[in-house]
Length: 432
Image (cartoon, rainbow, N blue to C red; front, side):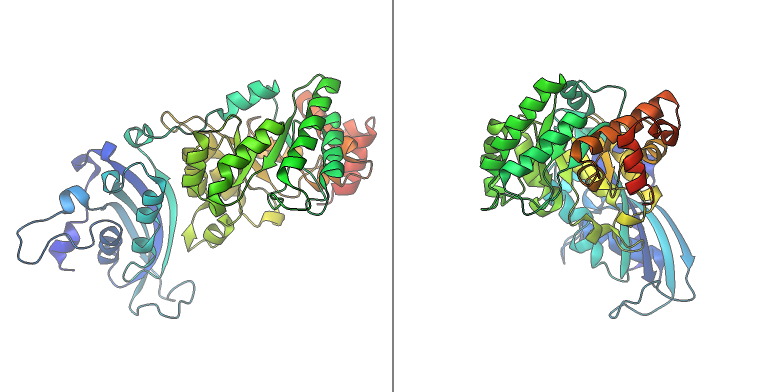
């Protein structure tokens, strides 16, 4: 690019109608001139060739992504990660904010993803290492999306659960049980105090535990537990499958008594979720398989909060995400970024419930609550309920007992002295 070519991909916010642009934050490492690298990044994701040979025209004013902010620091040691085919030259670590005109692709999630984190970004000249750190949408773009149908308020209303976290549990063993014993485990956990007992994200519609049979058994057990406890309960059925089966499996599960549906967001695809949201009669709950493949490395890929925002945009009412602690290998600040992406204002799009999870139990509930800073989160133990030494009912009771202590300002360990279920949970799981 010539200096004039490069300048055509830079702009000030005051020069743009920002309602027409999505804002993107990238960190990248480049070889060569950072300004030229940033201009290539804009060009490759928008109008890569902005005029035809022999024509006096320039498509950049309307169609080009534009650099709004750029900072660069030399890296004398070279790239932070070796890339075999990386271009050679003086290396800089850069941070850039780009305004991308959403009129290039419209309110279509596949086209949005193709533009802002597709070929043009990850094959941009001179930039072997790049990470999309954040994405922000103007209200004008958000107006074309429905977002969550129920959101946090709708889920709380269904459960009549206010001023506290929502208590989930992943039924364990997650793989191997036929419908009847699987349903019994769910039933026991509801009796103990869970709001939602869920299929594992890997438990699908399989011949040894068909969704129709499992949903019928869990639906009946859920209704029975609700009658006996006097509290609404939800069975969360996993309908992850081929896209052309989602509508069918929605009806199978919901008609049998499932009160919410789990979908593995990225394997199925966000556009499929947006399609299902138009049909859904119950809350849709996202799980995170495949997201770590994009987000784990600090200097490459896509920050998980971008995926969280997109899941909310697509219509998920709840987003289960990698949680706190070493089990999920996600930095605490990144977990909190994802929590905020569920809760913060997003134009007309309702907030969705964040559920940071991973090896949780009554022993970790207070830590999660203190980190999140409010009761607007879900808590999702697996073995912390279903591996409790006194059984699932006691495991669920230990979660509720821990919350009672927290809400009353009592030390959880002190409360355990008069609550054997909680005491057993702390003894079994407190070292994790």
